[in-house]
Length: 494
Image (cartoon, rainbow, N blue to C red; front, side, top):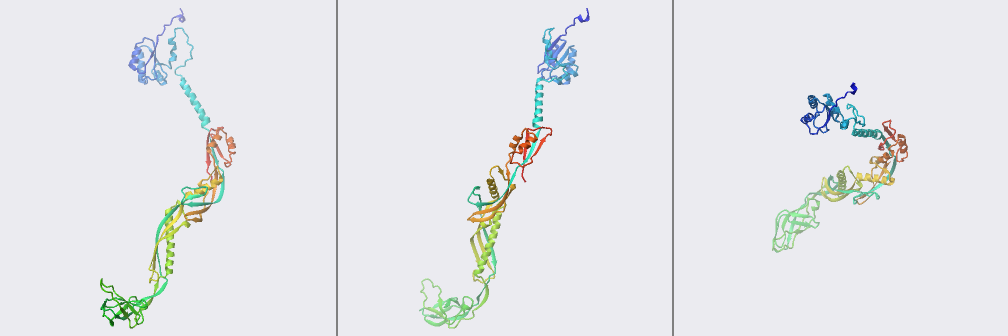
């Protein structure tokens, strides 16, 4: 009998499936319970054991002690590598064990199997690889290429004179009537000033003196105290120098010296010019004193004058004018401070209402200096600079029509000039210039240019009349024929 015809003893084989919660003791018990020569140990993915070199070393020793060959079956490449390091055979999947469930002599016509050391991707891996390849293609041809387009909008210069009304009674701007709101500021101001008087006049220096006698037809004696007033026909008043007792029905028995009440030459009166007596008040119930007169038998003398500076009406008028100028200047300064840098004050709208004045001393008074004080209430109309500039901007835009923008940086507003005033409503005009900018929508341009080449993009942009010539187009990377990512930047005009 030839060797080829000799019978080869069959090798006993068995498949043992581990549970996810098995430990090495359980594995030992399962291996000891089988008498197969080859044991295929199938390890599930979630198994907690056989993850470290030490566990495989113990498993290899156990297989040696049992005189059986243990083959590790797992889809985990790391576990297979650890098993091979300890001399254990490995299988990639349970599909390689189908022959164990077939009758002897039956042929299997499945897919060819590969050695487990050759990495064969799973179905999930193939799907993932395909997906990643698709993503890479999208990134390479759809996302990576980017076209950067820089365009400039067309500009249109304009110049015109704009007339605007500032009205404190309105709350919102009216573009159609070109009215903006304003505010009336009020400030109370008090100023003082002085100036030397310009007039000259004579004033009394010495008082005139004389003597009077009393004529009484009163039935009772009359006592006249010191400084009793006697009056001359020209109105000059004199005071008696001493107390005097006038007897009843007497003529010239009572005499007394008198002195002019005020200094000056008017006190020098001729004889018999002093005629009247200003009698003192009598006690309650006493009869009135009647028929008592005075007479100067000789002229009074000694009254003299001197020339002095005196206040004139013209001095007061000039000082008032000086105070008004000073009050206006101070009121303007305080109103400007209250208006601040964000608002403008119209000087022609300033109004001063007098609220009190005083001048000391008065007209004709002797003085070295006249002092004046003036209090006024000042009002003025102010407006916000932003409101004024905004009205000029809206005026240009309304005349240009739709499709234009006007940045403030391209608007030159001239200094407002006063036109007219109606109470607190002020009309102003300004010579201004503007550079109007055609509106450009970068999103619309980007949508039109998506998927275009550089030459196609340049042709498309040339059809937009709102764009300035020579747009800048950059396609990155250079090898890309076209781009689906479009970045459009609109350059601001200068």
